[in-house]
Amino acid sequence: HEFLSDLIDFLHDELAAEKCDNDASKEAEGDSKPAAAAGEDRIVVEEHIGSSNHDPDEVKNESSAKLTTTNNAALPTDDFFHLKVRVCLECNSCGYSRSKDELYRHLSIEVGNDNENDVWTVEQGLKQFFHSEKRDVKCEKCDDGKTATQTMEIISCPKALLLHFKRFIVTQELKPGNGKYDKESDGKSENKAAFEMVLKKNKAKILLEESLSITPFIGDKVKSPEGLYRLCGVVHHIGNTASSGHYTSCAKRKLAVASDDSKAAGGISDEKVAEEEWVFFDDRVGRKKSLDYVVDTEKNQRNCYLALYELR
Image (cartoon, rainbow, N blue to C red):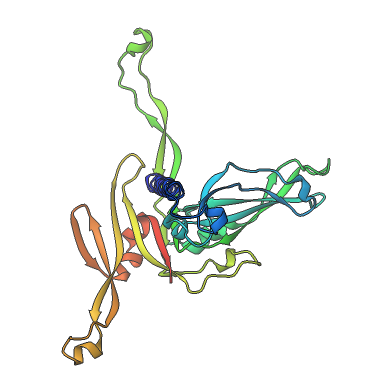
């Protein structure tokens, strides 16, 4: 998931830089007016600022500036992978609150316990991600405020929702010694058994819903997206630790077939009806699969690692 996250970030930076260069070239050649004067799309530096409900003069810069696009020509990375979340801290003593907006390209959500009969759902993971919690934070307005309640809400919905399931848990395992002397210690100490940190996999079953709604996590003043998020891709990790194993995937693809009217006319019409099918990928091997195989097979439920949903 780190590779995929970095890939999206690098792609966004390259697209933003390319757009900056193209806009600069157009202005230099005199083919267009400056973006600010002509009202054209342009790249600007957007600062994510924390806001206060009590004193707007004390707004503070909460994060570094980021490249973004304005108006309607959003970059593809912003068009599909731009989930904005508002994080608010409210003092439990005086009620003073402050907030900041955070951009997510994907969400990393928790996974339930690895019990034989328990099934964890994506909705449960999202509820845990967005649930309110108590934080030890000193209030900026009062002396008594030592804690604050943190809440999170979605204020901008993406076209594609990418979810990462936090399956790997940091554990300590006993590494046996070999009874030989350690060369680095000049042979003065014997190589004995020791504990080492291992990222062990949680193989809890996760039920991937075919359709998903994020409306319960959207802010009250934000319009909910029309339609639902539909599952269109899954990545599986087969193995016991983060340093070992194998990856496979399932992806939905669209097929264009002739409509009934077209078939009746002898297939002459260009009218098409879109159909979909699931394909399982394992290295060079690809096989057609059913939706039941993707979401209901116990092996896939215990190994699903990434899930991609598309708004439809």
